[in-house]
Image (cartoon, rainbow, N blue to C red):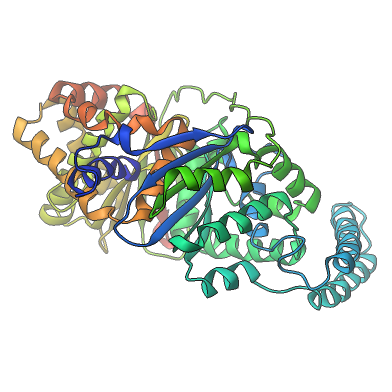
Length: 493
């Protein structure tokens, strides 16, 4: 739903802007392809002397094999560590030190996985690694990327890895755009994965904090692993604990070399610049990169679910409930229909589930809906609820299914459909006004397929009828297409 919210606002922002009010979306977005296959999307907006710069790759957790789960996420961490010229005091000396560290680190990984591993030998190797890491720190300049950007007015320097793609972003003054191109092209051409084993420990802690010790994270991870049996959407982007524990620099480098290449890359710039001059500058820095090969499509197909799946988690926290249904993803026609269905069902205080479960029956303190875990392959509509104290998850489920059955049997009024459309559009207008939001939207849709999906989105939304919603509700919101996860304290089970 978040992606769809972005869509209309972009169209509206173009319409209401004094500089582009007479231009269409297609006119405003300048798309180019460099000789090496990189896609470049440029949007001039001269409201402020700034630029939002996004670099996205059409690769994420869904593209990992069983031998490299978690690699895309860990690689995101490693790409902040610098290059052969940034982040080091003496790369010639550091390169030799990194070879020693990687040799000992891989000896540790090999030894710890042996059934008859000698604890004393393992400890000696770990002590040796610790000494090497201490010596290595003397050659490292920490966070040099961040410091350079901050000193030059950059803000929001960040990255995120999802199921379908990986994105690196920064907002900076328009007159520093060439600095961005120099840094980011260097990061792709000369990345050095320093401090690997230290960062792997950081990711271990991130996993413990965000999933194993978090009721929300644990529920979500369990839901995906239950709803999906075959498709790699079932795996957490961060990887399972044993996956992280067995990642090594070679796996990181191989994944990077294969997929973080121009043919899989989308460069999106939105802000105060001249498109022709900027394209030449981008080509000068990024055009020298080797093309690489396209990310192969995922061939695993999730079988149709043939019965309800249920999991109860014993965890020392307040009760929680998640209910998920398999659904198609964009650009399937039914995905548009789900946008309106979810808005009517569960978005905001006027939605059906909020009025029924929170206000009237007072069964839950809040209720939400979202689609996950990705948008490239078939995904899920997920309902999430926090029960009030002493209210049972069984009663809540019954109340939810009453509302779902209404969608199947009672046509929506024209007024309710109209209100839902307006709510979506209002959310759009509130949610996306700056350069960064526009860049994020274009980048996201281009990595998923084509940013032109946006052009007729409003028309598609307006074409959805009450009969369409009834049809989708009957075809997808079935018990045999449902996965339910409850989180309850052990004594309450």
